[in-house]
Amino acid sequence: MKTVNFIPFEQVVDTFERILELSPADETELVWLERRYGAVSDPSMQRRGSDFLENPRLTVLVRVVEAGRQGWYRTETPDPHLLEGGIRQALALAKVQERAKSRPVLPKPSNLKMEHRLYDEAISELDLKSARRHLSQWCGEGCQGRLSWSETRLGIFNSHGLRRRARATEATFSASAGSGAGTGRASGSARALEDLQPEYIRQRALDTSSEDSVSEGQTGNVPLVLAPEASIELVNLLNAYALSGRSYLDGTSFLAQHRNVQVFSRDFHLVDDGTRLPGLPFPFDFEGSPKLPLELIVKGQPTTPALTKYQGGQTGLEPTAQAVGGQDALFGNLFLQPGEADVVDLLHAAEGGLFIGWLEPPECYDPNHLHFRGIARGVRRIRNGRLAEPLPDQVWEDSLLRAFARLRAIGRDSILRSTSTTLLGAISAPSLVLDASEGMRPVA
Image 1: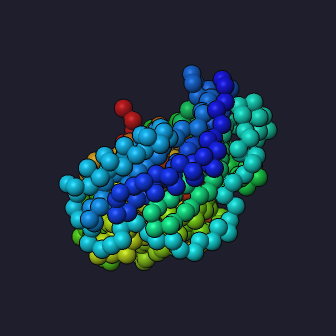
Image 2 (image 1 turned 135 degrees about the vertical axis):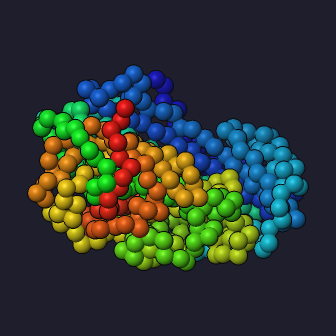
């Protein structure tokens, strides 16, 4: 396959400056997002098309403000004439939008510190051959794995003189050990290959695998231990359906009625910090606003959804510098604060219950109450403070409001992984112990 390189950013700058100069709108913003993905799997895990290295994919977002009303346009073509036409289309769309309650709508230039390493040349230079070589070295005997990686180039220009640009890399290693219901699995993400800790990830997969015979029988109404991978999926669901700006504005988020009300365990503390290590830091959002540490859930009380500048004006709340392009905001660097429990403490706290190794991305079928349904895998019984025999995969139906309100213990060790809602960041979370759940049943 012929590799297509990223478009030189000098060409982007020239095009954007010219478009901004020609725009008749009161405020104009241009966002350049170019991303390239790759992934390889252990030969025993490969499926048709599972190994790939994409050419860079481009998205250009045009946003205008005219008389306090926003309009937007999106394209995958950088042609200047199409972008000029895009501004006209965005202006036409703005005429039917709600007027902003505060102006300017787009951010003005401000100081920005880029203290952390965002880019790793070793990831940028990966091809299928070199990625398979890394994977072979990391997996070893008794373990299979998958390595995925991305490189992103982001540029944001607006008519107030704001100019931001950065490039970032990310890699995720997932390891599995064993087979069938006794499979153990672990994963982790990092900005640089040297920070990925593949030996640690591999050992965690081995530690949660089992060769014992599969157990049957009752699984409901027992406490649960969630491995960090499973905790991350629940936080990811919370981010998408409860903490996004759009869900808050349209009233589907529980925050619309329960902001600053304790709805979760007092031990539940969630922050967003795009400047923090260990993490996948990124210093600004898709409007160019600098990211700052934010406490989102404090002692079980949610404080704020993610909000663009426009959404902040509409709600009367402070914008959070979490714009993700288009007309929404999502938190991108979430940290569920760890507790003090080690592995032994966690298993004793859930004696007689179940261990969940990971969750397939769950679906939320009732956003107002955060009811979800997911497939729990790597399920093990807990007996005498240890992981016992494996169980078949389980369907888990529950509510995040209930689940996060009934925490028995929080682990002290977290993992970090990029997710579907964290475009340029990741979620960090520890193991969690939940009180009895009646919503577990074997997959049919």
